[in-house]
Amino acid sequence: MSSSGSGQLSDESDSNMQPAEDDCERLMSSLPVEKGWVDRLCQFQGFWISPRKLRDVLTCQRRFQAQHTDVLLVTNPKSGTTWLKAIVFALMNRFRYPFADDNHPLLSHNPHVLVPFLRAELHVDGQVPSPRIIATHLPHHSLPDSVKDSPCKLVYLCRNPSDTFVSLWHFTNKIRSNGSGTEAVSLEESFDQFIGGVSVYGPYWDHVLGYWKASLESPERVSFLKYEGLKEQPKVQVSKLAEFLGRPFSSEEEANGALDGILKLCSFENLSNLEVNKTGTLASGEDFNNFFRRGEVGDAKNHLSPHMMEKLNQVIQEKLYGYGLKF
Ligand code: PAP
Image (cartoon, rainbow, N blue to C red; front, side, top):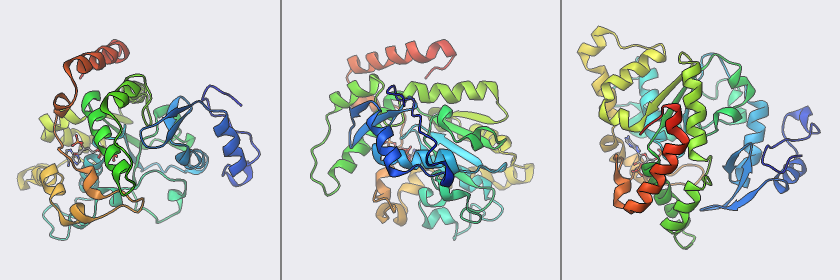
């Protein structure tokens, strides 16, 4: 077994495709560990993850069966996952659920309920209607083999690192304070960890770069979007996304305002003001309203000092600019 976070497991538990608890414990004890913002983080296959989630990832890598028609939505946490889930759900299901339908599922269900995260058992027929829309935060190199070998489509949404960091920091502190009375984690300490590459599913830049490269190599398979681009040119971006997903808007739909309707339905203003999103809670315990804070571009400058912004820009420049990726 490796001690560099490469995450090799023995084959002992292959018979049921689920790693035995002992096997997981052994693997865990061999992985690099750092203090996280909520829980500890261990480095597995080069990315940082909470030990609580490691077994699920291992099981998923072994057992998840991709289908050709799957659509996988991928993000670094706090890059606009909730928004992307809403948009793709509305777009893919627009004939079944017209945007103006008073009973549209997005009006009564949080997007995280309508679009599940990748789990091993999602391959069980009928759990998610086909074509399945599934989300994940896994880095590209750690996707299950069945996804890598499948022609299914991947949509990656990235967000500028400063806003992603600030959003993650706020979210983490909400989770920490949820009933536990745990002290808030300081912005400075979290920032140093983030730019040192230690963040959940990070390093941030490795995550982004993995999908950026994949989108350049296989543009018909991986679509790379930016949160800022979606904000700036929502119609252009969502129209391109619809084409990528094989569901282009017809001229009749354009005339009917379907694209505008979907954008309005999925807007921060609309979703954040729905009763379900103000009061509901995920099965895992997070309140839905924690997924809606400001939904703006550039809020980081209200939290990070000019020195911090400069430091982060420098790291991003070093890590990403050489690959043609700029924010
Ligand atoms: P997740 O990765 O844990 O699922 P995610 O949805 O990516 O979380 O992050 C929430 C962020 O998306 C919040 O950003 P903020 O902290 O900077 O405000 C949230 O406000 C923003 N967000 C949620 N819904 C929308 C939306 N419909 N449009 C734009 N931004 C949104």
